[in-house]
Amino acid sequence: MGQKTALGSLLKSIGNSGQGKVVAGWGAVPVMALVGVLLLVFLVIMLQIYNQSLLLQGFSVDWNGVN
Image (cartoon, rainbow, N blue to C red; front, side, top):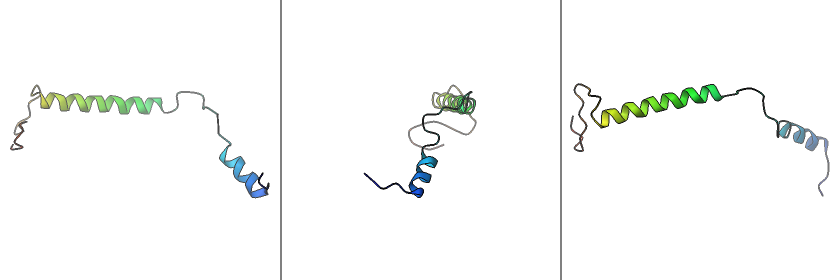
């Protein structure tokens, strides 16, 4: 067994103060949902450019890497 000290008790109370507690409400869900939607839109646009269903002037998609 270890020796109990005032410093150890203080550090234990600081470190374990929020363990097992859940904040009520939605938390970061709206932010993460927005990030997910923006990522989905970005991926759909990239897929459309690659499939050439969204054409950009002066930009070609080929395996040679030449525009």
